[in-house]
Amino acid sequence: MSLRNLDIDLLRCFVTIADTGSFTRAGERLGRTQSAISLQLKRLEAQAGRTLFRRSPRSLAITPEGERLIGPARQILRLHDATLAEMFEPDIAGSVKIGVPEDFATAHLPAVLAAFAEAHPLVELEVTCDLTLNLLDRFHAGGFDLVLVKRQPAQDVQEGMRVWREPLVWVARDRQAAANFARVPLVVSPEPCVYRKRATEALEAMGRPWRVAYTSTSLAGSLSAVKAGLGITVLPLEMVPATLTAVGPDAGLPPLYDTEIALLEAPGLSDTAHRLAQHIVAALERGA
Image (cartoon, rainbow, N blue to C red; front, side, top):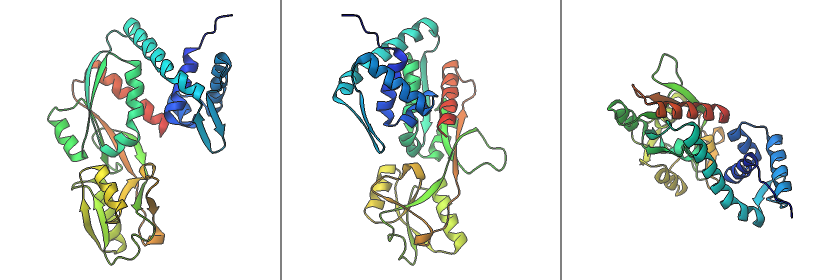
């Protein structure tokens, strides 16, 4: 029997498809087109002699043969990347402290940081999720190397570099949840909060009364309150869970302006932290 070899790039493509659940998102992460990702998977399936995913126009599911390969594939990639890092980037080591808003960390950052960790296994990442105000306070006190913070779209010169812009939407338990109140019940984070300010300013501009019905410092707490029908909240469009509903003019609510995420780097940043900052910017630019 002739020996079979599994190409590292094809294995990385396979694992990325499994992690993202989408050929399109896998392509965005790897910097390739959807058709290139599809071709790479076909090549790996030919090398392995197995079908690794079941595909239909509306679904993508890993096969039992794919499940058998995914664990070893991850181990191969970890060993491969660690070997390259040890041989060619021995200086990329140390620890980096980064602060991130909870909702952005939940939706976008895990894949970005995971890719960096795989490429630089000697680097230790310490990630803290908190409100933007708290993150900024700790950053200016020297508590972080990098922070990602929410802010109003820049009209004047602002601190940091914009790395992401996101549309905001009203989110409710259902389409009737916000339509029949004399004062709109809001589920918000404590002040100051960009989403809270955006919500109240938009309501006041259209002359619709509002009240704070529930305040939570966590995303999970806010979502639970909305799901229970205590009020409505504001989220980035990509963050709306399937159990809740994005609502708008049909519920008598005003449009919301976008917000943005900025990256701030501490003075005297280490080479390792600067490399992470560059990676975050490049990864978010590909995904924006």
